Length: 117
Image 1 (cartoon, rainbow, N blue to C red):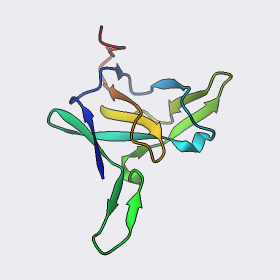
Image 2: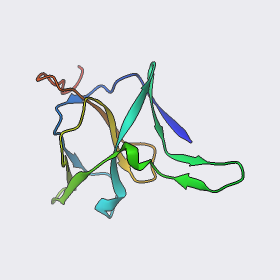
Image 3: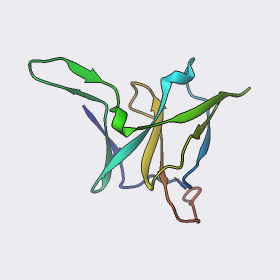
C-alpha cells in the first residue's frame, strides 16, 4: 500500500540537521519514525505495506526509507533530532505503522524556509 501526500514539496524546508518537538499520541519513543518520501510529479509517496498475491504481507516502512533519529523525553513531549545530516529531499515524521505525520523538506542551501506565509 502506498500513501500519497499533496504537492511535490512540503511547505516547510529545514537544514540538514533538524530538531523537532513532538507532542503527538505515543507512549513509546520507539513508535516514531523518520522516513524519506519519493517525489512523483505533483505529489509525494510513501510505501507503508507490500505483499504478494499468494504470500504474506510486509507492513511498515521499508528500512531503506528510514533514517535514525535521537529521541529525548522532555516535560512537554519528545525532542527529535537526526543522528546524521539528512540529504536534500522530502521527509515525514510519523508514528510507526501510521500514515499521517509531519512532512518537511531538507535543503542543503543555507537559506531554509521556516514556513510559507
